[in-house]
Image (cartoon, rainbow over all chains, first blue to last red; front, side, top):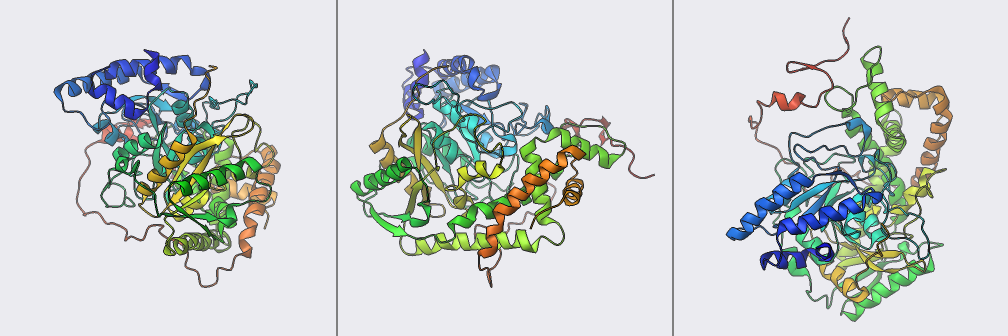
Length: 491
Length: 95
């Protein structure tokens, strides 16, 4: 039954409804695939018993004819989402064997709609990273390799486990989170579809916090339609998150196949970087041509503060992280290292529990918020953020419906290849995605082609606030034109 | 701006992260690389620009001032490294 794993979510939904197979069969096929793919290290915890129990329960519901929109669909959950009774660590040693006594809002909505949990997925520690190399469980392998090479590549990050598992057909879709590009960059590295919705679209309640004004959850899936189906269940107002916005959730799937005729697509000239690989340049022009062929109108636009988004992000995000991560003190949960007094206990716990990247970011955040430096760094960065958002607003005010950009400045790279000497080298991965978080806008990454080495590349579409539907319509056009990409199995 | 070794030790203490002497030069280099990177923000004219406080134009929602949760002390202490009854145990704080 292994071929069940190659279905899209939409196809599986049909098969389940027609009773061609059961959720238990579909779930078992994925559990076997996970077992055979342990070398990828995509899952940090497999929950086969729970998965089978959930599948059996939903099979009964399907038989009774009272099935939710995701009935029987097996999913992977990023280890940043609190799952009741199932270890949740954010892939940090400091959370140790933390077992939540509550369920995150997003996952509770997925279970409400009938989805089945296969297990918890690897990610960068506290979602801080762009290669899934900072996880305390070790790096994740990308199912894609360069043609003729055996080198294991990174799947991107921080949602590297999610992207790898979806691309390797280990789950039909996965939850992910995106603070600076952590959904879209790994999606681009693995030929999957990832959408970061508008800030406030999905509840952050029960998700381990990194930078609260930037964090937003979304799905990674195999097609735009699958991503639309997942987002519909994940989105929605939640009184437990004060930044969750109370606007109705549209049927995103209805946007798939909707005409894009007459839509104005902005091509921002500032995204044309010096030294950008010719392949990325070519992919971008191809994407524009596909949208044009579908009836969209292309216009050059200017987002003058683009180059300042990444430096402003590396002030705002660490500052918020240093504040959010103050809670890990070895008192209420997680790791505790002894000290002579309570201060030493905190210091030893945090030195031992946080990995190098997290320590570095907490320290830089502490510095930029400290007395005498707040105005020069944090306040200035928040003003720059206002300007970045205004660039987009000006662009949308001129009638632009969405903006097309490359998703990443390169394809996937090898484990340990980047950021060893200078952390900034790794940060540059997010150069095209981070602007979107800074402005709170929705952004989708869709597979669009391959580079000369046979590695997938993605395009990004940026939308108006709460207009995820247009992104799904445009994303579908690119998907139809580019086709789908599946890695050759080597694991 | 750049940080010296004494500042690295001060930040580490403020962040409550123990740092050994031999880690200081390395951390100093990394923090200075990040500070050099963000330095380009000083070119931006931010005269008269409001700092962003909320990325979505919305009023902060306020909850009703009512008790809507509680009686879950067992849950609260379930993951604590050291407890006694429903209390967290910590080293002596006040002499």
